[in-house]
Image (cartoon, rainbow, N blue to C red; front, side):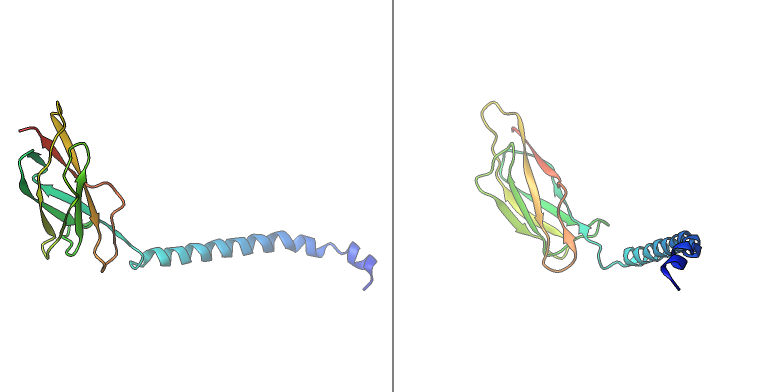
Length: 148
């Protein structure tokens, strides 16, 4: 076969587009099946934690507050660290507590408000336990502090 014969042969051009279409369809189908298999696995799921204070409204008097830590399905989470810090109401120091088997941490709070301040809030953060697939990326509940 000479170069002239190769230039004149247009058979490969006729079959090329359909082969590309078939390869593209097979590739997309395979990719969608693989992604469906991976997303069907529960191993990559991370449960977001939430903190629920009780009471969520308090006065400036010193008192104990129970903070329940739950996962995204509402189940209590043991071994999480609850951190309460000043926001628009102030605490002397950051207050921490660890949740028990019932998912509850009890913290002793003595908040203060500034001069002429009628209300304020305390911020709650949660440090997930070392075991389990938990995260705390979203904002948690806060405690409203009212002047007594």
